[in-house]
Amino acid sequence: MIFNINMFESEKPYAVVLGKGYESILTHKHEFIEITYVESGSAMHKLGSDIVNLKKGDIFVIADDREHSIRPTCEENEFRIINLIFLRNFADFDFKVFNPLIPINVAHNREITDHIELAKNSYETRGKYVDETIKGCIYVIMSKLGELYASDGAKTTKNYKVAYVSSAVDYITENFNKKISLEDVASYVGITSGYLQRIFHKERKTSVIEFLLRYRIEQSCKLLIETEKTIAAISEEVGFSDIKNYHYVFKRVFGITPNIYRQTHRNKFVTAMEERCRIQ
Image (cartoon, rainbow, N blue to C red; front, side, top):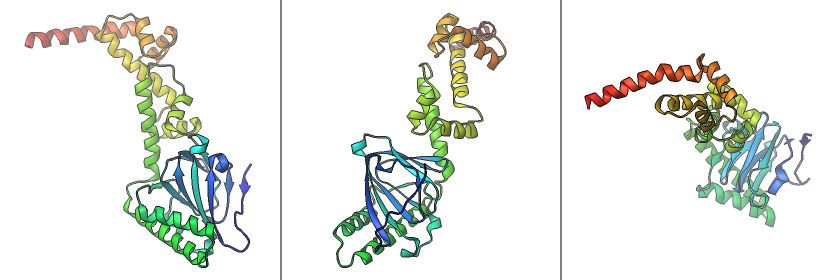
């Protein structure tokens, strides 16, 4: 279910809303501008079909009516966000400079965080010049964010997808000998399995599981050549629970059985080692 929300009081064209725990889990869309700052905790931000990891200090701007939601990935009581929302005509700004798929971490940027806090406090206390204060905070926050986006030109939407794939590869290469699934890899990366599968295939031209199987086979090759371990022992050591499956995948990758691979390459390995010893 998609919610088209209106979060404003009738007499004000803006609001500063504090979100806690799972209050932001629902998928929604809106026509107003939304500045979201992660005060504490971590979460996954889903924007259309894209998913971005968020951590403490991250900030992004939603300036269109795309469907989005935020799901905490930490303990519920640890997650807090501050939403500074306002009607488009409340602040005259080029909102196209902001990319919500690329959050900027401003945890150590006192100018931005101080103005977020000022906006929140001013909205809560509703002083005489609250309208002017809120508008001033919005301009400072967006201006400083715009500068950060401009100075970080090398950071693109493609880069965070590459980072997800790289993280998945790291997890696989460190845990290939264990019983792991696509869901395990996706959980480690912090995105959904379907989304990981799509971007992994785009970057690596193969699926997550196929990459895992091929990596296991590659690791087994070294053991076949350099050790006297049995095929069954090697199969288990590299993460195959079924030796028949190991034989099947190995032959699919190399076109020969593990035994033939060992016989063919071990002689070359032994000869090379003998040559090295003779030289030394």
